[in-house]
Length: 214
Image (cartoon, rainbow, N blue to C red; front, side, top):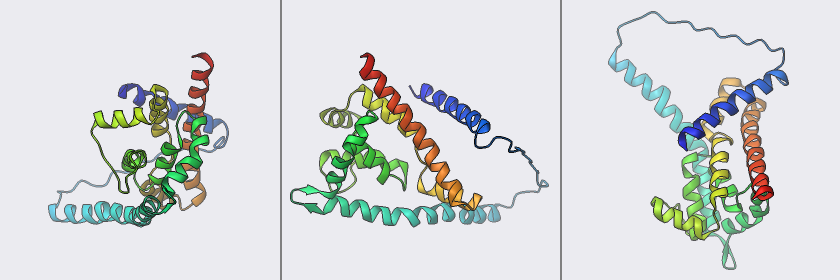
C-alpha cells in the first residue's frame, strides 16, 4: 500500500505539472542553474554552529510561530463546552455534511484543519475528538482501529483519508518557507490550494464511484 501511495503521489505530481505547463504557466521559461562552491576542508565547529542556527533554530522558530497559537485554539475548543458538548465536537458536527461528500466525516476534516501546524498531530486530534478527551491522544494500532471502526470508519473512509493525507495543504513551517522564498502570499496560497483541491476532487471521485457501482 505504501508503495502504491508513493507511486500515486509521483503520478499526480507529473500530471499536475503537465496541466500547469499547459495553462497557468504556459509560455513561462523554466531554467535551472547549479553552481558548485569551491571544495574546502570542513571545519566541524562552523558546521555545527551553522547547522544549529540555519536549520534547527530556524525551523523551530517558524514552528512555534504557528504551533503555539494553534495549540491554544485546540485546547480551548476541547475544553470549552456548550451544554454537554465541547466546541470541538460542535465544529466536527458542523463539518460532517461536507466531509461525507468526500468519503470522510467532520472529525477528519476538522483534524486536518487543526493539524496545520504539523501533520503529525492530525491522527491524535481525530483520536481526541472520537474519544471525547480534552488533550491530544495517542493509541496503538489495534486500539486505534477499534476506535475508528466504532465511529463508522470503513475501507472507503481509510482510502479517502490516505488520499487526502497525500494531497492536502502543506504544514505551517513549509508554508512560511514558501512565503520566504517567493516573497508572495499569492504563491503561498496557490501552493496550499492546489494540492488541497486535487485531494478533495480525488476523494469525491472515489466516494462517488464507490456508491455508484458498489
